[in-house]
Image (cartoon, rainbow, N blue to C red):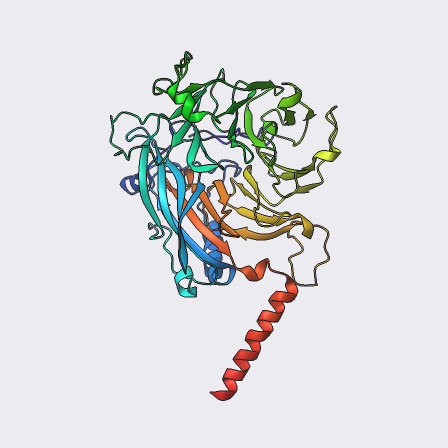
Length: 495
């Protein structure tokens, strides 16, 4: 286990190699057989302590009040990514929807890309006692494994193609991006020694491993990636089917590649963009353009690009944060706003109209509500001012920038509550490595934590939706509560 680094040098993104362990293995180890695992970014403290247990127990008591629906699903192996897929069926009380996740193993079993079917309960359907009585150490009946793909290397990142959510891209520890048609891929059994599944398409162009930075374009079937080579690489998969059918001359196997692609299935880049001085950690497209995008990296820079005018940065914010940048997202409702998350524990919101080509630009606001490195930020698809952030502190915070600076009534909010924070999901007990808003089901989120350093292995997947009393207009909520109060009084008179 790596020792916790000094606070002046924030730990870089990613799991230490070789630390992965199946959750089932923890029961085989003798108690007290070694030093307790430490959570990255926690300052070296033992995450599983009395205060943490009490905080989790308090959160669990509040679940029936805070949530409209919650399902917790125990994972034997940790997953570093989770994404919603297409809706399969729509019912009266629940919908059936695809979910993409992975199994990051210790090489005693193959690494896998998992396609699951989820039952998403509709708003105001779940009973209070059903929400409260979940077992965090059990599998949820709402999540069923549908198909297993044997992935060449661990799955670090999954992204679905907006134009066809049955097509997903994955990043692993190699230079290539792998494209999978999950419906066409055969279902495989995860047994040691089995041959890896073959991707339907391989995107080449990186000179070194590209592990995390990956995005799919909402406007056109374009793919964007960043890697350790400090490059941002752009591809078009518009001609995906015809590319597979032609005689490609490019080999999919570079010197450090672990990918063995099917014949004639490699695509070269549309463009390679140089401007970072360290590993690129995340990338994102402008919502309405396949030619405009942004990237962040371990050089603390936020860079905006425009492929139409060349491969050099259009805007480069040299010091967007005081440490490595881990994540970025572009607002789909207002493309002027960009979010960044960093190892300095903060989330910054930038207005690109205030950024200049000489690197000058301060964030519109700095959101400080985490106590460890921020790993994921994402705008809500339902409301332009709302976004989420997850971190190594085990929390997933929901923010509303329109609430920053608003006058709150006395006693309605703790004086220590960070500006803009209006909900905190505390159901995970270790670092929340990824989450995804459900575009087909308002205010519904899937989130996943890597519990390897908390409990000896495995992970936790949670599907949840906060109570609508927390985000609906105040007057509307008060009117509903008054109506309910009047109903209770009327019932008490007649009983």
